[in-house]
Length: 449
Image 1 (cartoon, rainbow, N blue to C red):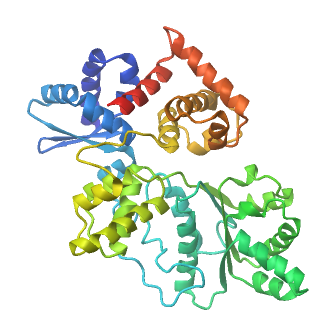
Image 2: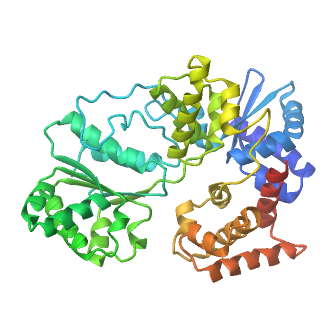
Image 3: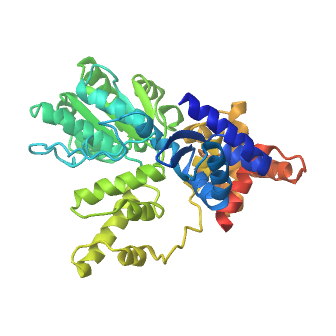
């Protein structure tokens, strides 16, 4: 690896002379050489968007420098940062494209999908911490992280992880008292118990559990009686070393109209976030779901589909539409069927951005997490990335200031307006900061390439 580092530094030095400072800073600086074997140079790149730009705009330049320094004709392969670990280190159980078979669960829990297991889940950098935390809890419920609080946007796999915990605990101990519910269902239970004057049965049922899993806990906001019941249930279960797992679209500290004492309980264990799945993880999810439905899907077709949806639910919906269309082709997924369903033709590329594309790439460039850029924190190192994201969401997607504020953690529209104006002023300056100039150019090239 040391020789690769020196070789790549030399190659980058040659490339830096040939490209603009903005392009070098944005596209080249954080790349690295993974290996040179059998005439193939494998290069690690921060994101799929940057890979696309390097391939289309600078492949010949890179190849020329690589060939010169290696001394022979070389093919260049770009690999996203999210899966470079699988190349440099042998990862078995958590491999992105793991072929392990789902664990068979005898019987199943009410409202819990038996196919939602740890073995049946794709793992990448966006969900790895949450995955490891969930498996730790499932191995030793009530002893390690209690409660486990998982948060993130819709469709990132929170429900899958929570139900995987329930399935794992149930597989080891079918006699365990386990309940999976949503905050809405828990609310209905409390309301019905009060209406029928039968709260004692409800209390016995919930407070006698060994594992309580509640999805979308944010919806208890403003419901005083529900919060009071949950508080007492929470205390009883923790005192008995029973495990509690909660999910939300935001961390406990950002939950509104929830009692301080409950926020304190939610924060008393381990709080982990799951980010939106990147392109590679979406591709892996598709391959796993295709196997689940018993159909054959090539990696190239999975990549094509992965461009069209930003979360697991959208991916599954597209896959099911494609499978339905295969009835006319003896169950075989063909390129024509995919093109028909996705309304694509030939080499047509995606000509639009999803808000997550912009937010994730800005965060990747500045080496921060999407949850940080959306948080209420006003640290100096977050100000510029946040303003750059605001500007790009406005200019590239034509979103309103209110919509942008909502995407970035519920900020006021005047804050967004100020952020957009700040970046506009910087770009008008002939000496605009290279980071802002580079990111703006990167998205402009992607949109017109």
